[in-house]
Image 1 (spheres, rainbow, N blue to C red):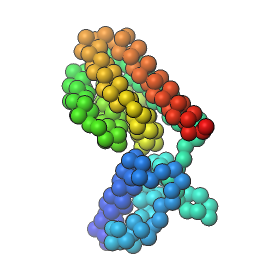
Image 2: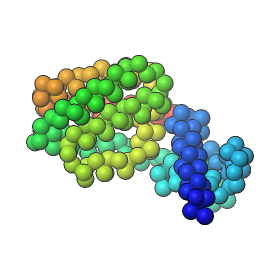
Image 3: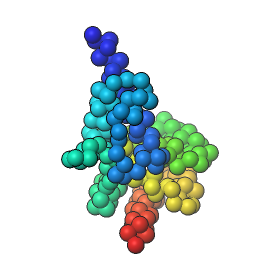
Image 4: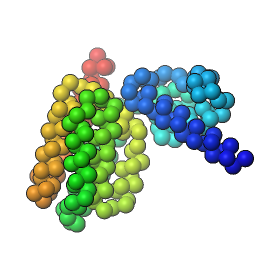
Length: 219
């Protein structure tokens, strides 16, 4: 019985990951309905693991249930988008302040450099977005603050989805790579103030990019 339960949970997680990837790639867009029997047929299972997967995604903030319509891909309001990005900026600013106090962790810095090399070769928006998140998550880990790390992790998939929209704009990936390279350079030199200034402008540009995108969408 326990084995069956474990197998069902593993399948639910797998289905949730699949739907998440569809959302991040833009194969599913806000308002699209998630039809249980289609996923059940695709995975050769009952609807129970699919329902559990959708429940997990609702907790993550990627899916919402609407009366008489069912589960749909969540559409974020402009305020929700800006709030997520501004909270991210606040947490990264706090992380840089802790790094200034505690010093640059060379292992974390090397991990960031390794991730950056992969980012340089990546052209697919959804994969670049995940690498970018790993880069920033490693910066947060350098702060040595479990509280900041936990709060940052809670931004989760909604933050990645919003960032993927920004990276979809022409030139934003190239700009991102350049600025991440500069950030690593400042940290290697232990020039924390320049690193903080760059990170602040980098994150503000993401918000500006989203404002332009949302502005053109609303015209």
